[in-house]
Image 1 (spheres, rainbow, N blue to C red):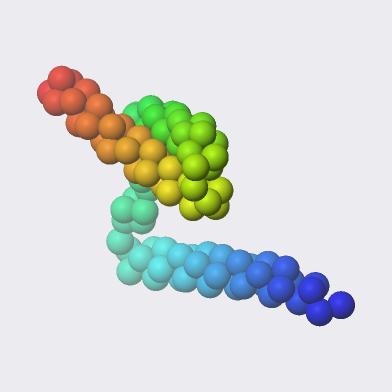
Image 2: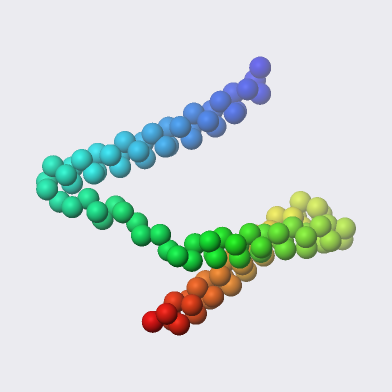
Length: 108
């Protein structure tokens, strides 16, 4: 019976955070509309390289998992998986940033 409180508390916390976020966002937008300001500042233009960034990041994570599998035979399994996933995920994000920066310069 006591083990059920943790998942319930977790989902209630997630719900509360999302509720506060959405109500605050709505109030801000309504206040802008009342003052006659343009609410287009909230519209984000999606980057055309989002899929490239996610692809390289996920490739980095998968390389990290594969490397961690081989490293887990030498060191603690938990340490191997966490360290390699974070290391190669970070390397993937850095590589994605460099590639996107190079592609953006080429377009200009």
